Length: 195
Image 1 (tube, helix red, strand yellow):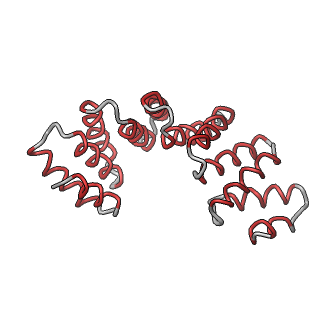
Image 2 (cartoon, helix red, strand yellow):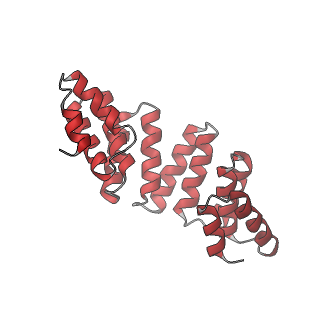
Image 3 (cartoon, rainbow, N blue to C red):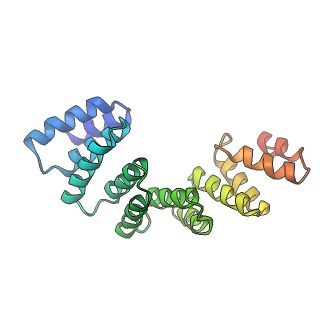
């Protein structure tokens, strides 16, 4: 079984099949970091966080240079409500690859969730320096600015999100809140319609 098949099954959301192929491969190649990684990713997708954690830990032992493995461990720890440990994993993934946008984004979301809005904003902006197409980073920044009461910045980031994705999650809601607070209820229609 080749690695392309494993990845294709995973990205096709055929997690049980992917897991089974990884298990077969690990019987003959127990030191295969990629098989451990995708076994862990599949288990995470199947909500078996404890086993996913074990697989990702093993993958990390075998390949310490892959920021995705470390980020995935952070996702698992976050799902297990181990927020501090998750934060450390995201930070370690960023140290491994300073421009690894998925880890920067996940750390920003975690900081926002924990109420550390200034750090979250910094990270969302940093994420956008790396990947200007990441709609959810614009939305995250807009949510932070909205919570901080900076409607001008919140509007700007929400509009950027909508430029990338006309149905960007939460962007229209953010604009609605801003325009309702500014008593300018005609403006949202012009933005969402592209006028």
